[in-house]
Image (cartoon, rainbow, N blue to C red; front, side, top):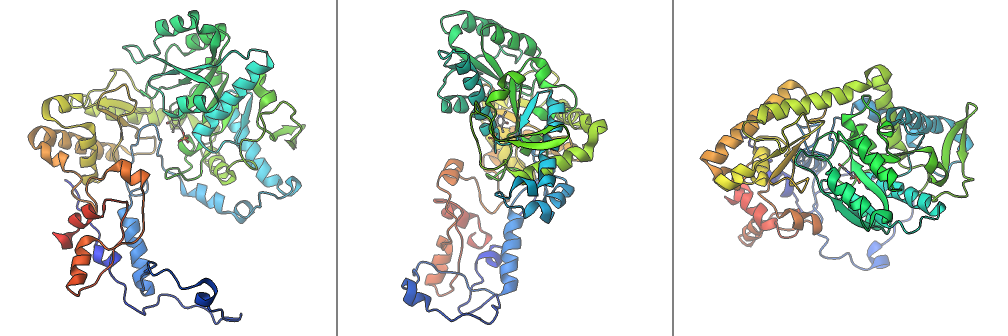
Length: 525
Ligand SMILES: *Cc1c(COP(=O)(O)O)cnc(C)c1O
């Protein structure tokens, strides 16, 4: 059943009283300064709330209850791998010996931190089979770009400067063509065949045609964003190599392969990993990430400097790299992300690391099997860590779109899956349960989906009007992202009440939605 979830807005927004103070400042031990004389009067629009400490605390705790996160419920956002981040990771990252390091500290004073960096590098080397790893890139897209910079440097070192084209399958994540364009490459899209694999005939045609000699690289996501393992991956790599190009693996979907199969052995020249997906470190909202990359020996000379490596048992920070592409980030990357990834990897250990991918793939196939008759997979195959389902028939027959189904899921207490990606699947719903969810949670989610799909047939407006249980209704998501505005402002109904002498305060979440919020507040109904 849908869950009602409307925090009491008057508690959150309307408790200010003139002169009320929520903190005790210590007696000043410095001379008092008249700020107004120094800076001019405070801006009158800075109408700050005046509340007691308890009210303030409730305000923030109530706000936190409006949020949804992996720690409050199931979060099957496909391609993003929103897995649980074990608490022990945070405990390790909080050790003052790590968290209080200064990034400019001389390297001889940070042997423990370097040991962590090397430890992560060595474990990732083993997991991917690449000769080298660097942890400098701070996001997946950053790792993609760094790999393409290595590939560019490699071609240039061989005098192959006419290679200015990067091939990208049409199922790829948008960051792939963006990274290629950022490195100055032209991008050519490669179609997907009826089974969901790279269309080898089309690829062959491009490689043997006019532009074949211009190909610098192919960016292949494996498993693809269709949640499918590319069965011809070795063949694809061979074809590109024969044409003189390099093959990059988008490894954001590594959760399907950890401990089970190793990308360098498939023929890739380099890859990126999203530590903030596969290795549990939290991400989202632009938080810290790590887009570690792996590469073959032939690209090693160009690696970002400095290179941290072990030589005769001693850790060396090697800055003497004349052919390096240079730094791609300050210092050593996002160090505390590496501490979390290290902790996560060591907690599994070599014996259990394959459980990650085995359980992730099992969970995704379980969801696919339980929903198949009501929401068919885009390709009827064993999926990897995520299943890609299509709601096309609900759009055709009942005017209900994937987005409507997702919004209704919010009423049932679940975070929606990814929608409309990959772009080539109509009314796409991309569900990635990850390995950490129990069968009970997966069943509850599948039951909710089946119930919603019955509603789609019988009462489609329930879906069109969803969500109906939240503090806001359906937002203009583009406006909310592009014009985010969290300034406090009086909602219209409060203003009206103020005109009647009642007073009140409120916060707008994004430009243009305060009207909608006002409408959805119980007090406005
Ligand atoms: C998440 C993702 C990326 C980009 O990673 P960011 O850290 O968000 O830059 C690239 N490719 C795929 C398939 C992804 O899922």
